[in-house]
Image (cartoon, rainbow, N blue to C red; front, top):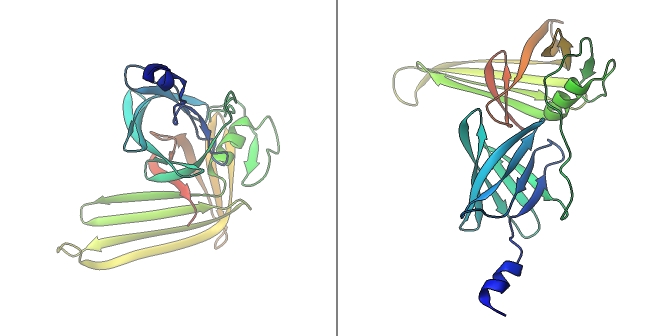
Length: 241
């Protein structure tokens, strides 16, 4: 048997379909074409083309979104795979050969009045949009970071599966020297959360346990599958720490 024939019969360790069932993130890697792996990165109904290579035992690739390319990697352990994208790591299950990746629905909607509470099924209407967003954000942390002008802001919003939330934000102000802080502002809040549709707009609604105040923030997809926009501010979607 020739070396060329043997190589053709040896399965490629990267080619296949991968899925993180908790978030719905999926990855399909196809056989090499002209030295690179094509495929698709799927999330929330989006199917984004990828291009990648195997370098030093790591699958190093990019996915295309809105005519821009974003990097990600996937590593292989003894029995599992780990996807790293936008500072977030996700365990990936390799699907059996021939298995189809489950289809997830995009957040866009035309339904009105359908409501989903965190951790529950839709109460009214089809609930496809709210169900999709709830599946994406339920039990996750939304992290916001901003620096500039001598000020550093960090905020995170934990959206627990039982419909409760915990929010913390802190702002540090520099006193002029690098690494020197004159003071820091901090605030915390707890309460309940839910996702609603209103006139075709998807909103994250929180109700504070402290004063009963209701806040509504518009939900929109970010530049990648691990980002979300709340009132146009970019938050990273992470596991709750």
